[in-house]
Amino acid sequence: MTAVADAVAEGTIGGRLWLYANYHCNLTCAYCLTESAPAVARRQLPLDLLSDIAAEARAEGFTALGVTGGEPFLVPGLPRALAAMAAELPTLVLSNGTLFARRLLAELAPLAGPAFAVQISLDSAEPRANDEMRGPGNFARVLEAIPSLRALGIRVRVATTTEGLEPESLARLCELHRSLGVPDEDHVVRPVVRRGRAVDNGLGIDAGLADLPAELTITADGAFWSPFGPTVHGGRLDTDLLITRTTRPLSIPAGAMLRIAGAGGARADADGPRIC
Amino acid sequence: MARVELLTRERAPLLARPYYERGDPGPIAAALANVPELMEVALPFIGTVYGPTSLPPRLKEIVILGVSAANRCRYCTETHTGVARRLGFGPEELAALRGEAPPPGSWSERERALLSFSEALSSRPAEAVDLLRPHFREPEIVELVTLGSATVMLNRFATALELPSPPPLAGGGGPPGPEGGR
Image (tube, rainbow over all chains, first blue to last red; front, side, top):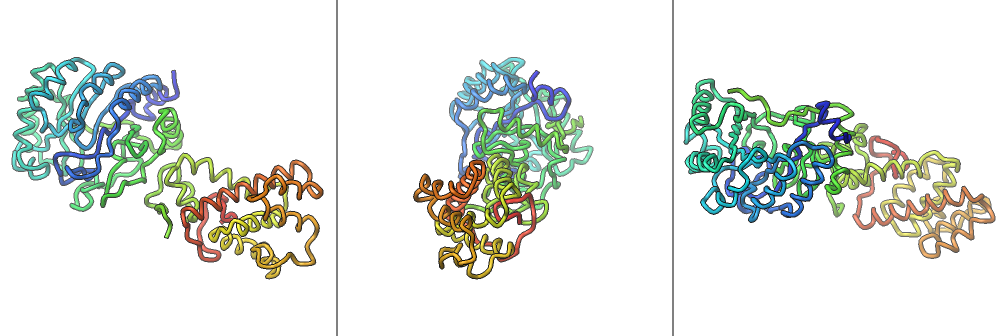
């Protein structure tokens, strides 16, 4: 057992290693943690680095991988990197669900299987309420993407980021994802965190070290405590949850994270409460 | 204004937070906080070298201020003029340490040798060590060279990044640091 594997087994840190593929996005969501938008700096992790880190992650004792951004599927060639990652550890990629045209679907088809899943954001069963936060036309594209991915045999999870859904709204949303073939255990509901663009829009809840999942997160700017860590506000990277600038060998940020987690304050679950 | 961001307490990375617990850690720490894994080892090293050791603080301050003045490091010279004053160095002594006057007649041979060593360390390092040999034992020479070399590094760091000099006696706390344990 490695030190990371021990810590994961004990629940001191989460088993999933996150990678920020990029920071740019085709959407400009009101609560985006990273102020992602089409014109922001891409700050992209090289594709070969993604697969190399995946191999290191397995050797270090991590149990799963997550890829987020920005919108990861804006990175050309990402499906090949995802396939290499999934060959190492179960891999989840987060997406806004708007880019799954025929060509991308064809590239993703070989990834169908238990080691790969796509998590798509869907905040409401009401198109207007969803698109108010996430942009015009988002709802319709997501409702098209989920069945398309599932038809390929790809597992799809739905993530709902909310300021607080009324029970009836949540019930309608759960009905919707079930109708799309996404079971309750694959529906994640989480609060808006007051970082990034959410600060300017007066959205979300404050969350500090003890509130955020202890899941090592690698970005082009360094390693962070949580996927909620490498946020951007006013165009400037937040550094309060930075662990190290060094990301490789992975043992350096992992070791630093274990020291911090050993000092207390760690919470290892990343996905938040499942409410369905 | 510094040429890099001097991280505030609110933006201090996780490994850097202990250095902010007692207030403003000073510009060197606030700059190093941008790379926490370097800060985590650099500040304890500097704290050990600059902190209490087998050599008297007075002798160590001659090296720190003497090297800083020889390297024309504005930040370190201004900061350590204050530290030296608090250690009891008088105006004539401070002028000598800042390279503005010869050492006072009251200084011992050891102190004069140390100042000569400090002035020579950056430009003629091997010769600088020869200046110490008649007056110091080998472990002391190693420590003095370590202290002087650490000061050279900080001189370059502070000058290159244009760190702002802190006001006299300002600052909070944190672990003993390069600003003389501020």
